[in-house]
Amino acid sequence: MNKVTAVFWYAAAGCLLLVIWGSIAPTNLETVTTQVTQFISNTFGWYYLILVMLIIIFCVYLIFSKYGKITLGKPNEKPEFSLASWFAMLFSAGMGIGVVFWSTAEPVTYAFKNPPLAEKGSEQALNEALQYTFLHWGVSAWAIYALVGLVLAYFKFHKDYPGLVSATLIPLLGEDLMKGYMGKMIDVLAVLATVVGVAAALGFGSAQITSGFHFLFDTPQTFMMQLLVLTVTTVLFIMSAWSGIGRGIKYLSNINMGLGTILFIMLFVIGPTLYILDMFTQAVGGYISDFVNMSFHLAPNNEGEREWINSWTLFYWAFWISWSPFVGTFIARISRGRTVKEFMMGVLFVPAIVCFIIFSIFGVSALNVEANGLAKLSELKIETMTFGMLEQYPLGSIMSVMTIVVVAIFFITSADSATFVLGMLTTNGLVNPHNSVKISWGLIQAAVAAIVVYFGGTQGLQNTVIISALPFSIIMIMMGLSFMKSARQEIKKKE
Image (cartoon, rainbow, N blue to C red; front, top):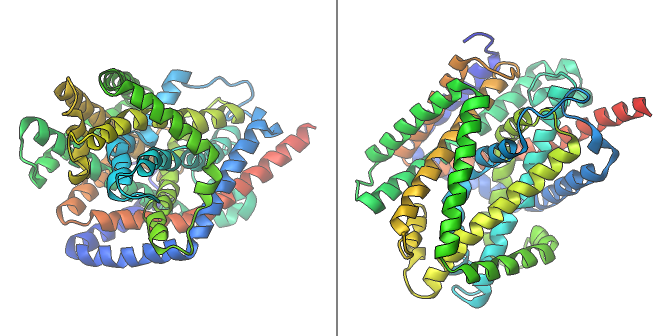
């Protein structure tokens, strides 16, 4: 594994310690990390809400500013990937597996199990279910990714810095500090957040695929079956990683967007088409008109509402921040040659709109099922809700099989993207890290997922991801300041 840095070994050791803790004392891991996450939510909730809004304002400002013309590469350099492939990879790596996993479960939960403001099953709860889902998966989430991705792409491809989080802070904190232990600590944090976050996603993805097989073919819903799914998909994503970003991830992302589009159109046509259109229109309107209020709503005088905000909105903001080193690095890697304006408009709005469409089709179809008494989806396990919903519509079995395939490919592209990013972060930012490094990280991710799922430490793993978001949020602020300092100096020289 040539050119592996000390960051690789420090991060691998951190993963090993976490796995040992999750294996020997999973309950203790969950208890300790839950207490820490509750403290962070109660103490820094105001900070997360203000920070995410400031990030959105910053990203929108860059679109219309003089910095929008800066190319994330050399002057007049053309984009490496076509617009269609870029959008497909943006979505597949960033949120694909999560969107499919939660597309039914989140709206159903908000409407019938744990609504944000209204009574369970009420008209208001049904209306708010989609609106709050849009809040959590919309522009706010993608602005977090856009900030990290932009700064990494700018310093890597425009300034020729190493493709590392620590390298982006050199203009602000100095080269000596960022090439020393502090820089290594920042990069290790980015690696650990990526490994733990993706391992949790692999656990969810394998659980949904296993649940789908059980629902359709009555296969056993056991850990061994989940391990088999995890093993097969691990082999596939390692093969994809071996073939390189220009082939494996690109082709799989394009295939999956095509297959996913067919699936969504099928359910849209077969399902409650008019109801989907009505709910989508109302949810978009509510999202736009109530965006500021929802984004700053903290309910300091209502314990029940505050608990919901901690469990959902603050959880999501912390989760997206903790995933931003992974997704941001990958987005940076595939965005070479695009201008700042083009990058921001593409990353901020296109994937968010795709999320809105998917949640509307799957989520509203599910709300329609439960609201009309066809099935109690809210009583099913989260990973089973989508298949329970599809069962109520014509061609449900065919759409369920297609859903399993879509989830499996998103599973592969997410893990493949993560191995690529981890390879970059542990080889001093190499744009094309050695296959042996990528395979090592692929095996480590799969092992972390399998061991933690087996010992029941998934919640503790999720909590660890959230905890890592607090220190990384400070790093994000410094990344934005560093970009502005460097870009301002560059523009000043040209004037």
